[in-house]
Image (tube, rainbow, N blue to C red; front, side, top):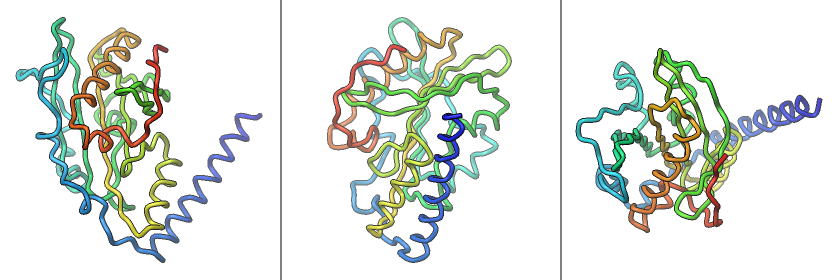
Amino acid sequence: MHSAMGQSFKGVVLLLLMLGAAVLGSVLRPTISVADTLPPISLQAMVPKQFGDWKEDANGSGQVVDPSQQANLSKIYSEILSRVYVNAEGYRIMLSIAYGKNQNRNLQLHRPESCYPSQGFQLLGNEPATLAINGIRVPAVRLKAKLGQRIEPIIYWALVGDKIAATMTEKRLIEVRYAMRGLIPDGMLVRVSSIDTDAAKAYLVQEKFASDLVAAIAPESRSRFAGSVTTAAAPNHQ
């Protein structure tokens, strides 16, 4: 009963936020792009090809979505980076980062919960997680996708501006706050995944990979990849 009431309350809050965002969008009409006030994003230059125990696998192949959807993606994202990394043990991780300069009602980040099923994957798991990324707590999502015999554990997080948007409610709240200041935020989605039937092991390796990755990014740019939160975090081993 309490669960149903909670879901109902969340639904009402989300509806009010959507209505509020619509009203603010029509009344305030934000015109200043946050991205235009900051140094430009260049994923190829900002994300190192080698860091810690990881280096780019030049023979690997990683994709954000099916190539047939590429035309639509070019309208949503300003940049997409897709690489495969390998460590000394031969473990491979696929990294995908999608950056959109303007996050408004017409241009929104596409989350893996939608992208994977559209490619024929079945989602076997979907749960929130708090990652220890370079000493800060990053709210994220863990997924497990299946296509034939392929099992792909996935971790991802999404940002609106320099704030992590773990849920659609939080995303709307962040957008409303920006709109009230007359600003249009940018957005980024960071996804790491691997082909591994042992999801528990995969999540641990992926979290360490993500932490090493963010630590390797220039300090002045890290908040654009992992948010501006500064709370110390302990590793999540669940």
